[in-house]
Length: 303
Image (cartoon, rainbow, N blue to C red; front, side):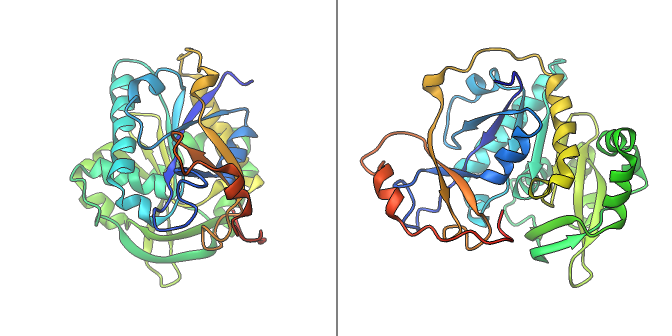
């Protein structure tokens, strides 16, 4: 097993759907898990409703905030969990305990809302960037000096050129933040800088990649986990995780029970496979019943 361990906070399953509790309490799209595993990273699923923040924090080398359904942005419990781990990471880095964070799509949105400091769930704006919008990265002049872009430039300059010139970054979001709004928010622009931006289908500009100024925190509004061409980004994150020295063992008994399912129907055609996690055993916990639910069929454009 890899010694690199990243904690991924599970995304709440929607209570309004029949999969809730029967197939788990939270989920993580398999694309995120497989992408990280290809770079030698072990996944530790953290239940979004945990109260053992410090316990998990001391047993992982970094945090990964994945993409997910928009309902998660309105889940106070999920938001509180993300915020708590970011606060712990800031404190750790201030104390010379190097602790990286990566946020993908909704994960990056959570990072920006938390950094804004007002806990404003209406902070994000609407964009027409859903349904697999393929774009090149429009990298800011300052972004070329970011740690993330420097790593790619030094390790694979041709790959960086491809990302800047070809339509190979996949976008699948309806919400985001414009560069102008980003720069107007004092707390947000104090913590993070814009690495790249893009236009949606209506010519509306949105921030597509961010990096913290002082901390090893990174966010992408697009989906590198959906392409093997973007494995260099998870390789960069693996290098960041190696700088963390947390080495407490994670007991097998504390691993969440899960089932890998075809979740096309649940996700409305966005995700192909997901890990559905039971946070605790209840009367609804029923793997056999989960097996017979109509979870849909895979499609080529799914995650």
